[in-house]
Image 1 (cartoon, rainbow, N blue to C red):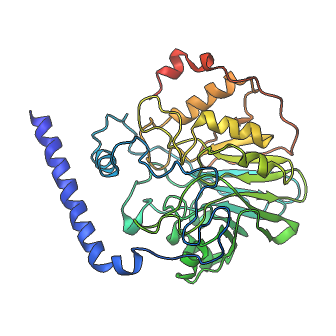
Image 2 (cartoon, one colour):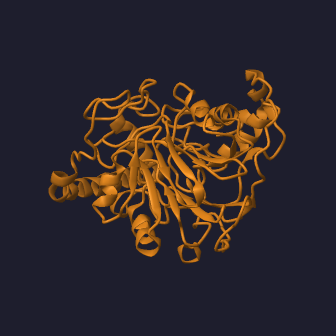
Image 3 (cartoon, rainbow, N blue to C red):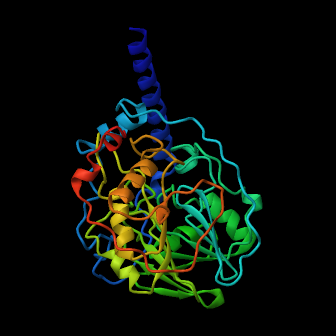
Length: 391
């Protein structure tokens, strides 16, 4: 009985808090933020003149577990969805990367979530940098359970930032402002996101899919297609574009960053591979489960689809990201890496080609070598007690 009363009080408290926040935001912030127009340009295969869309079909509008969006948000906020418990915090030992890594050598440090520091060819490349405590507007939103793998103060001078889209867990204006003031890096982002950066005095280069930017040290950054959506507010949905990236390096093979993505038609990894052999792919593997045994949603791939992306990229090595930092879904904290191990075993890949790394621990990535051919993934292989026990 006491438990039930506690639940009701928790729900009422959360509801009142959200009502107060919503009222304050409506009064103060709705006029400038209700529907921002970030981009104006010609109609294209993925822009209707007002909003961007996935040309391979949009399956990202409905809540990930179906039913109503309001009900989904309420269950998520109140925790009344029988989700497995996450740890309040996970210990991390931050590292101090070198100032530069020269030549063909590549050193990679996972900062957490989709933030990765890649050091190679004398350049420091950072993906979707987020150092804030929460992933959301005005300090609200999912809270970190891990410290960043590199303290911001220990971060070497950044030359290039790849900014995939404008969701708060990828597009952290507080961090971007700090980086811009300190390093003035080259920031490459898909169409429309530059308007948000410009409002804070941050310069960037925006490109459409297949657009290129020439970087320092003889590299090319190619903005490539993936399958997702965009929004900073309730009604500015898809006013800016989302993307993955290929960084064409002078030697040793290319870097691929998938950004945030669902599988869609599954052809975009092969499109990225056409720009040359991929030495390292950074592929999301988390935030895919909102119902028991769910393996993917329209806007996020899980480990099964991530392995498909890895195969179609023809990458020599991949690291699973977008898990274990901010709680965005219902799967257990360590389900993504455990499931990925099972999927790669079922596909017959040698250990270590596509796995996860510890936050803050630098790893060396060898130059590109053709990966072995995988086995077909039979459904029976994943129908094991180990996989079925994963929540």
